[in-house]
Amino acid sequence: MKPSRPFAVLAASICIVFVIAACSSGPKIVTVPMRDNLKFSERSPKIPLTIGLYLSPEAREYIIKYQIGGPFGKENEYRYLTVGSVLLPNARASLSEAFTGVEVMDSPGRAKAYYVELEVDPASSLEMGKFTFSEKSVDLHLRCKVKRGNGALLWQKVISSKTAKSNPMWWASGLYKPYVKGVSNTKLQGAAEESLTLCLEALNGELIKNKANIFR
Image (tube, rainbow, N blue to C red; front, side, top):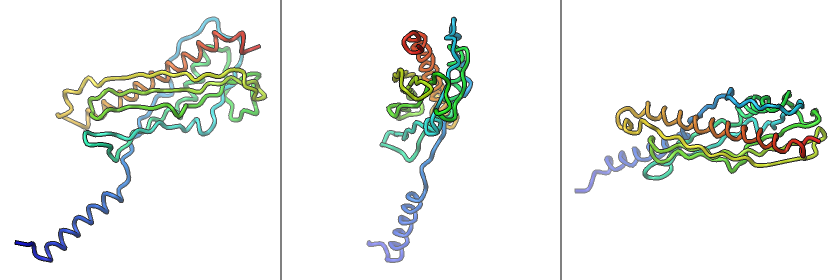
């Protein structure tokens, strides 16, 4: 027996409402913060210079974005990793372990004899996996440049570090998902902070190793 016309109209209307609601709802964005006070190794002896540190406004706002994938494909949910917002304070803390002084510059036109310029390379990425218990990894690439006060390029290198963290609470994923998702984001944060620490430590190592050729 065919459904009555009023029922068919009602069913179609309900479907339209659900489609409109699904289309009108924006993506779910979860921002994963990072700490701006990471710890770095002291280098001895330090390079006897006060170095400038410059990050462009774009570099300070850089976000690594990732679309969540599920068992049935991509979902309307994203993770934002706010690496740009913590790059400046952590770079300043790191360079302070390798130089006798570090001065943050708002403009490259007001530089010391030398300054370091940093930005996140767009090749940087993160991976969440398809499940809450999947391994979380961050593949971070920093563009590092040393310039004279007049802007002349002296040295440059892309420094990379990839760190992965697993979720030890995978067995609880079916018990309390909000808790496990929180652990998942914490693991992502931990991977990001470790990658950033390793990149900045490697930068210090490169600058110390090449100091005679860079700072002349």
